[in-house]
Structure formats: structure tokens, C-alpha cells
Image 1 (cartoon, rainbow, N blue to C red):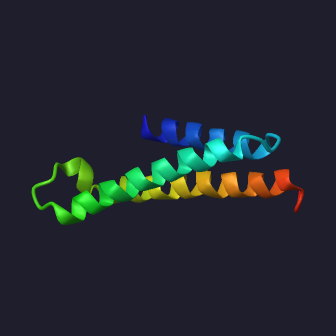
Image 2 (image 1 turned 180 degrees about the vertical axis):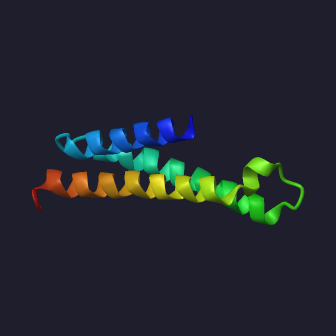
Length: 87
């Protein structure tokens, strides 16, 4: 199940990379909220000793930080491409 969902996420990332640039402000907001939530999850896991196990599973937490970083990078690249600075 985990491998199948990772392959699905990778396919979605490839699909997003191949599409024409649009929607960078929406991606920026989604990526920002996703990054904030991911970092908050890690902060709770570090700061609260009795936090549920979901907050202290580090590999999935870091995976979400990487995915949020990808969304933010994609938004930035699409914003640049849309502004005509590079294609």
C-alpha cells in the first residue's frame, strides 16, 4: 500500500512538471499551508513529551516537508515562467 501511494505521488509530480505553467499563486498558498502544517507536526513531536506517535514518526514527517518543498519550488518556477523570465 505504501509503495503504491508513493508511486502515485511520483506520477502526480511528473504530471505537474509536464503541464503548462499556471496556478502559481494557488500552489504557493497550498505549499505554504502544507509546509507550515508539516513543520508544526515536527515541532509538536519535539516539544510535547506525551504526544501521540503520529507526531514523532520522523521519516514520514520529513517526507511531508520534502513534498511541501516540492510544491513551493513548483509554484516559484511556474511564477517565473509565467512572468517570462525563463521557459
